[in-house]
Length: 382
Image 1 (cartoon, rainbow, N blue to C red):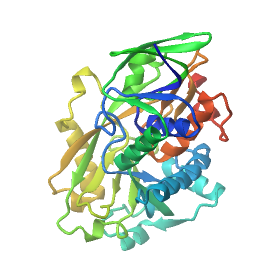
Image 2 (tube, rainbow, N blue to C red):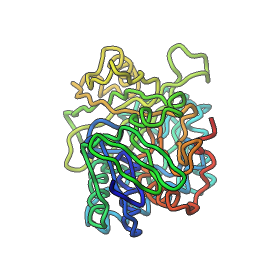
Image 3 (cartoon, rainbow, N blue to C red):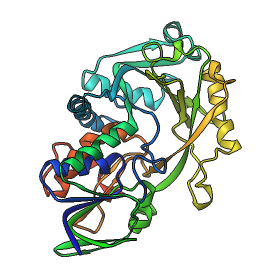
C-alpha cells in the first residue's frame, strides 16, 4: 500500500489547486481523477469563467475572491501567460431583485468601484442589451474573465513540478477512516494518507452517501454563438452581464430566471450564453451532452427577449454540470461525522475562487486555521 500525507479526489477547480498548494508546502500529495483534467465531465471546462468581487451571493465570499484575484495575477506572472482579462460586470434586473440587493451590499461594504445605471443608460452604453424600462443595472467597474481550462492545466503542471503525484483515468471507488489514517480504494490500487479531500463534483455523491440527500446534480446547457459582426460583443465593447429576471408565471418577487453572457475573448470567435438556475436534474438517463428541446426553448426565450440580436444565430451547445447545495452556498470543510475526510461543493459559481480554495484546503488538511470565516460553508449546517 502506498502512503501519502494527503489524497485529493477530483482534479478540477478545487482539486488541481489544492494539489499544487500542498506540493508547494512540501507535502506528499496524491491527486486522483477518473478522467484526465481538464475534461468536459464536470463544471470546470470551456473557454471562460467570470470573476467578480462585488459578490451578489453574499459578503462572506468577498474576502476570498479578493485573495483569489491576487493569486490569479501571481499565477499569470509566474507563467508569463494571461489568464485574467479585465472587463466590466453588469448585474441586471428589476430594482427589488435579490441579485441587485446582494451586489450593492457587497460593493458598498468592501468599497468596490461600482455604478448604478438606469435601463436607458445601460442600453445607451451597450445597445445589444434589451432592458425593460424599469430595470436597473449594477456595474462592477473592474471585474474580469478567466481562461478556465488553461488555469487547470497550469495548476496541475505546477503541482507535478513541485512533487505532487497525479493519477488520471483512475476512479476512486471507496474509502475507510481509521483513528490514525484514511485508506482510499480505486479501480487500480489502495492508498493510505493522513487526510483526504473529496472534490469530485457529481462524483462526491457516490463517495459520500451521507451527503447524497443534501446535494443535487444539474445539467447546464451552455450555448456558444458566433456573431456576424463580433465587434460589439468583443472584450472591451461588451461586459459580462448577469440577469435575474422574473419568470413568466411568477408573481412579482416570487421567482426569477437567471442567465448570463460573456464577451468574446481575444483570439476567439464565440459569445457564451448560459442559464444559471431552473436546471434539469442530471441523472443516469440524462448524462448525454445533447441539449433537449425543453432546455433549448427555455434559454431561447430569455435570449429573444433580453439579447435579441443573438436569437437567430445558430448555436453550438455544450453541457456543463452543477452540483448544488440546498441553500446554493459552498460546502467547505470536514465530512460530517469524520475527522480526516473533507469535502468541497461549489454550487456552480466556484471557479473564480480556485487558487484561494487551494490555500484554504491546504490549511484544513494540515490542521491549520484558514484566514477566512468559513462558517457559512460548514457541511454540517444542513
